[in-house]
Image (cartoon, rainbow, N blue to C red):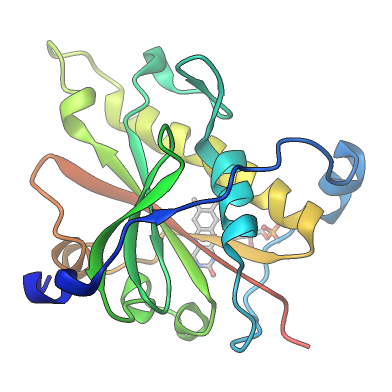
Length: 198
Ligand SMILES: Cc1cc2nc3c(=O)[nH]c(=O)nc-3n(C[C@H](O)[C@H](O)[C@H](O)COP(=O)(O)O)c2cc1C
């Protein structure tokens, strides 16, 4: 990450998420699918981004979220990678914390469509929240936890007419450097989101 590039980066205060409405659940399940063709001209508004991130992994009760997590460790952080930069989603504060400025969308994956979409969400496990006392199965659990968040994004996108695909194809080492991740952080998955290509 280029530290100087952060000088111009601002915290983005998101509008309050709209926590009601959307299509009925059975319609959304009927529509859920992966899609890999995105309208490269159409961006996602801050309101839609706020709604999406809340649906994905926001707080829906005191200290608890829209997705379950093993032992309630809540070890996943979501990073939004847009044309403007890389941001960490602060769910409690409903804001985006700048990590790097610049267009790193292509670097979030290995497939060509990744750079065309307005948004890539990178799932990062905070290992310091799960590495306690030799318990087994924690890495498996963090991938399961990521899957629940991903499905929330799939369902939100199906309801909103957005296209999305979850991805394991990530050049993790390279991306971790761009995102300035520490040794305690591990990328699990990434998810591309945008409007369908017409
Ligand atoms: C854990 C996981 C990793 C995936 N990784 C990729 C990927 O790297 N690239 C991609 O294009 N699709 C990826 N997919 C999407 C699958 O290819 C897709 O879900 C599958 O073809 C079924 O299609 P559907 O989601 O439309 O039902 C992944 C799906 C899962 C569950």
